[in-house]
Amino acid sequence: MFPGTTARITPDKPAVIMADTGTVLTYRELDERSTRLAHVFHDAGLRPGDHIAFLAPNSPEVFEVYWSALRSGLYVTGINYGLSVDEAAYILDDCGAKALVVSAASHCLACAIGSASDSLVVRLAFGGEVAGFTSYEDAVAGSSPVPFEHQPRGADMLYSSGTTGRPKGVKPPLPQHQVDEPGDPFAGVFGPMYGFGPDTVYYSPAPTYHAAPLRFGGIVHAFGGTLVMEPKFDAERSLDAIERYRVTHSQWVPTMFVRMLKLDAAAREARDVSSLKVAIHAAAPCPVDVKQQMIDWWGPILHEYYGATEGNGLTLIDSAQWLAKPGSVGRAGLGVLRICGHDGTELPAGEIGTVYFERDSMPFAYHNDAQKTLDAQHPDHPTWTTTGDIGYVDEDGFLFLTDRKAFMIISGGVNIYPREVEDCLAMHPKVLDIAVFGIPDPEMGEQVKAVVQPAPGVQAGPELEQELLAFVRARMAHFKVPRSFDFADSLPRTPTGKLVKGILRDAYIKAAQP
Image (cartoon, rainbow, N blue to C red; front, side, top):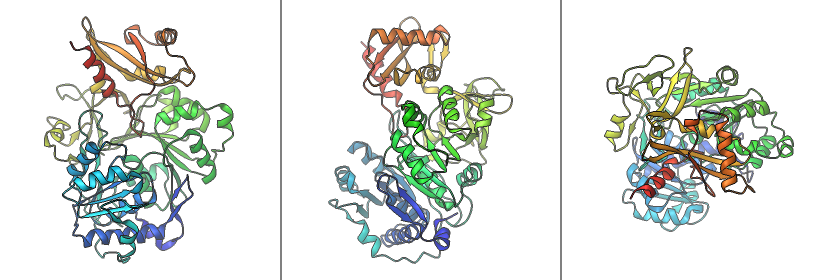
């Protein structure tokens, strides 16, 4: 359960391959360089429980930093390189990082936040010079390659997407075992479930400052597989990488599926994806039609999990189960599912409520925010926690999500779940992206608003609006149909595909105020 084991057995095996350049980081290099980096941090005074941060696009160095933290009892935090200076500086300050590793590709942002921080004792830059930072390569080359005798396992402390308000650091308790000992709950669940092992070639096009790309990369290394990374998702490049590297496992978000499905048939058929054994998806709800088309294309190899950065619980579902229960995100694989009403009462099968996971102990806390941590806990059961999703469990224990509590629309006293409308429109040939939310209505309280990013070459306007209205009316109850459509050149999404709907909704609410 540690790269050092693979380094001793097959030292020249690729641990990381960059799909765009072909750059390879072997297991020997990953083990030695993460060891050397661990010495750099230790020599600077960092000790278990301290924090390090990285600001970098997808690169082999990210996993050198990651494993240096995990073999030192340190917390590691990824900072989104697309943030503003104030946003990035907030995360660096909030996590209290004592070390910051940056890529020269983010030179300006790195300089700004690095010089503003008073807590940093180590500033390292790779890929070029960054003012105020020491050379990463020189620091690594000048330190010891001998592993410490005592290597307590560290953990990630990643920040929520920040779709509403400031993002919060999700801080798990540090594990009570050594880095080469079993005990990681994610590896324990996902490894056997998806068949990770030494023969795994895992493709990941999502940014490593987010939970799934970073954690799953670590899981692949724990089982001795090879991680193939892409700097940024592109539908055709992803299919090329699957064919070139004979990818066996991959992970996606639904918007990536949609982009690939909307490629010309010739472009899809020209790529050989037969090496794929497991295609994992998560992070956002997947429309039923989209998932069905992916299964038709790739076969019954799709696996879905539902979870969160908080790591408070997981559900799992494979293709066969999903085909029997379309729309479900599966049964509990980590924690016990509890569906509760507004007053905290546990609800029976079939009734919609807040989704909680029960664990033996509190699996996380929001860093520097005791109230937010308390709000995530059930009022009567402190080890039951929620991230605000709502849904129901059927009689067989399968979870169906309806929406986020924050985005449920109440119109004339009736609950409307925007996801239903978004799923309906997602695969319309003239729709590239869609957001549905509630806006103030003087009579009904709220009305349903849809904002559409038209597909390339499609003309936005009244004719398209009428076509989309008719499309929805033919497929769902009329009270769920948007009262109107607006059109936009693009919709705000995080790099992992999550729609930042709050930005749109807030703008409409503000515009409606006198």
